[in-house]
Length: 368
Image 1: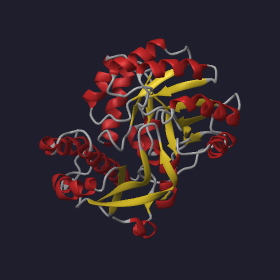
Image 2: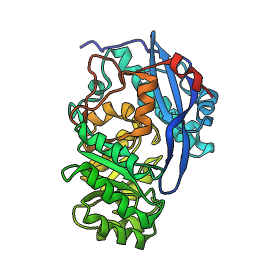
Image 3: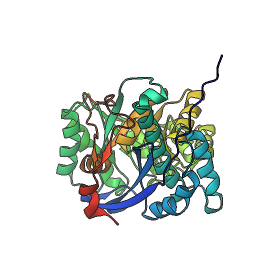
Image 4: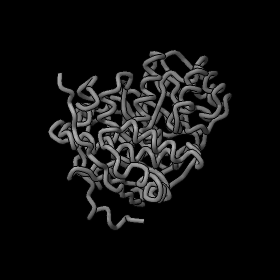
């Protein structure tokens, strides 16, 4: 039998650019405040196609891509996504793997997956191999900077649109949190799941006390009740939280050992990962394999437009965070950004790759 051969499709020069987009209202959680979000976009040319990837990171991420990672993958085979990913990971050895380095790899890797699928004329989920045709979302916002009226309006708005899970931020003023959570429950009714996210703001004993108070309000998800660095504390909360309340963390993971340590500690009921942080779609699928080996659910953190295709392919995925700030930016600056139907996102199979196009002219005013 004659061996099949094909000419290599060479990757052109990656181009990264950064955009600072003001929020529509001041935002804060239990430990941080912000008034703008920086989006780093990568365009990867090859075979008359251009792949698009992005991350939410500092503008320095774009410089790292342009100054280093572009050299690493230029001229390489666009079909060899794993080899290109390994080459980028090797290249940042002396810079440190967590943080900007992994987010730079993420944006580039996402663009290279999009490019590969576009060259083949396939939606990315088809290239990856679909496990489902759509994925559930949970509406996410409810910032600690919101007054009660704004909190109620946002969360009830998602519920009215058919989203069956909503999440709010807590932890800024712990004494007020039970009242805010009660207001949220009243706004969304009794049938919609209520998630809370402390972003590591509580001590262990604060978190234990509040978990029991939140139980009576039907809270079913307690994210980062203590710092993600406190694996023993997360395990304590997982062991002692009320039945029916899942403990979740993992959004700050940049490499596989981070996730392995969290899983080995038995720290979470649901692991979170972010393809715009954990070295891209390649890294995200590696995390999914860890979850599958331990029969543990995986939830995608933020960046919904980037996560739809890999989440429909990764078997352990339970849902995607439909984060207010990122949803707003993605619909502003990307043609093809999706809107949930009956609380689920479904990839557009009529579009190749990830299915989005960057609106350069609309983004120009935010360029850093």
